[in-house]
Image (cartoon, rainbow, N blue to C red; front, side, top):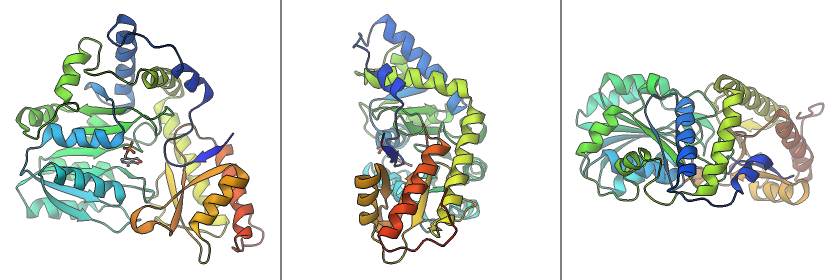
Length: 369
Ligand SMILES: Cc1ncc(COP(=O)(O)O)c(C=O)c1O
C-alpha cells in the first residue's frame, strides 16, 4: 500500500473506509440523529470541552472562515499571529471580510513568542480578537498555544484558533486554555476522508456571535446550533464522511487521548532522529518542532521535485513539498492520524535509498532507521 506521508489527507484505514461505504440514509431521520449526536458528543472529549462541537460541510479553510464570519464585524481590529502559510491564510480571510488586521509575523520555521503577543496587544487596545495557528503545517512548527492563550486571556480578547493539524493528535485543551473558537478538519489526525470541519465555541464566542455583523449564511453556527438540537445539520452533510468519523472516533476513543498524544510524540521523535541520521537538517528548532509533520531542508544540489517524483514512482511513498517561500527548499513528512513507527521507518529507508541516487551522499554508518 502507498505510504502516504503528506500532512493530510492522511491514510484512511480500510475499516474506516468501509464504514464510510454504507448505503445512504435520511439525513433528517432518526438513525442519522443518533450518529450525529454520538459523533458530536465524542468530539467534545477530543476537544476537551464542555461546549457543543458542530460539523460544518467544508474543509479546514471553511472552518477558519466560520471563525471569522461568526465573531467579527467589518472594521474590527484583530491581531493575526503568523508563522507560515496557514497563519497568512487566516489573516487573508479576516481581511477579506473587512477586519483591520495587524499581522504579527515570525520567521518561517520558528514559533511565535508570547512576549511579542503581549507587546502587540498592549500597543493596540482596540484589538478585539487574536487569530493564531496552533500547528503550522507549512513549516512543521507547533506554537506555544497555552502560553499565547494565557496572554490573550490577560487582555480579555477573543481567541480564534486554527487547530486543523493538531487537534486530536497532540495536546490541545480547548476549555483549560480558554480557546474561544477551535477549528479542525476530518482529513487530518482523525484518519477520515476530507469533507468536514469541526468547530467549538465558548460562551465568549457566542456573545461575540450575537454582535457580529459580517454577513454569513451557510457557515452560520447559530443555524448549526439550532439544528443540532434536532439531531441534524442545517444543510445536507457529507453523510459518508460522518459514517467514517463515527467509526474512527470509536477507535480513537479506545486508544485514548493520552496514548494518542504519546504515539505522536514517539513518532515525531523517531522522524526527527531518522532524518538527522541521514545527514539532513530539520527546518525547525527541535524545541518547537511539530509532532504531526516534519519539515526537512533540501540538501544542496538535490531538487525537491526530483526526490518526490522518484520516491513516488519507484518506492510508492508520497512526500509533501514546501509552500510559498519554502517551495523548492524543503520537503515535508506527514506523521499524523493512522501512522505507525513502521510507516516512518519505511519512509526513512526509502529516503536512504533515493537520496544517493540523486547525488546526495549519506554519512557512512548511518542507517536512517
Ligand atoms: C494548519 C492548517 N490550517 C488550515 C488548513 C486548511 O485546511 P483545508 O485544506 O482542509 O481547507 C490546513 C490544511 O492543510 C492546515 O494544515
